[in-house]
Length: 245
Image (tube, rainbow, N blue to C red; front, side):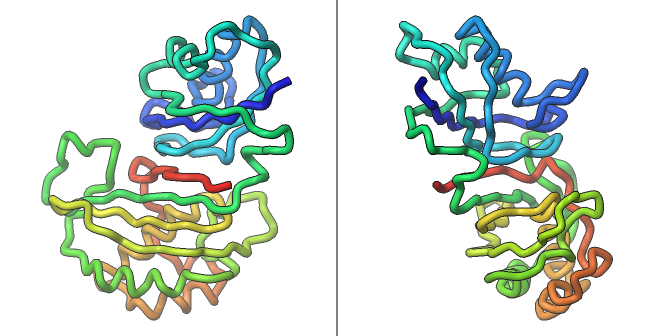
C-alpha cells in the first residue's frame, strides 16, 4: 500500500475549519469526499494540523494510504476534478510508510496579513485585516524579538485549549512589507498552540499602535497570563504558509 503526501492550498472563507464536523462544510470533508470519488471507497486522511474557520492555507500537508492502484498517474488532476474551486491539490508525491503529516513536521510557518487603510479594500476582504491606524512596523519587529526561542506561551493560547504543555520554540518572527500599505507577520516555530499566532498578532498590533512598548512583550511572555496579551486577531488574515519535514 502506497503512502501519498499531498500539499493543499485553500481559501478558508466558506469553511467551518479543516476538521470534519457534523452538518458543516470542512476542508477535510471535501478532500475525503473527492478521494472517495477517485477510489470508490472511503479513504482516511491525516493533516499537519487543523486550521480554524476562515483561516487559509498555501501549504497544508496531508497524507493518506492509497487503497488501490489507479490508472491515472496524475492524482492531483483527478482530485482537483472532484474538489470544489476553493481547494486545490498543488502537488503530491509517494513517501515512505513512516511519514506522518501530523507528527513528522520539524517546522511550521504561518503568515498573518494586514493592511493600513481608512476604508475596506474589496479585493482584500476575507484575505487580510484592515487596520485604521498608523502603525510603527519597526516597533512591532522589536517586540517580536522577545518571542524568539523556547518559552512557555501560556499568555498566547486560547482558554479553551485542552493542552497542558504550552512550551514552544519560535525560530523567526518578523513583519515585512508587501507593498501598497500591505504587510505580513511571518512566524516559524516547532509548533503552535490554539489561536497562538492570532493572539501574537493582536499583541504586536498593540505594540505598533503604541499601546504597549516592545519590551512589554517579554513581560507578557513571562507572565503566563492570557489576560496580559492583546486581542485575538480575526481568522481571515491568517495563512498556513509552509510545513517543513
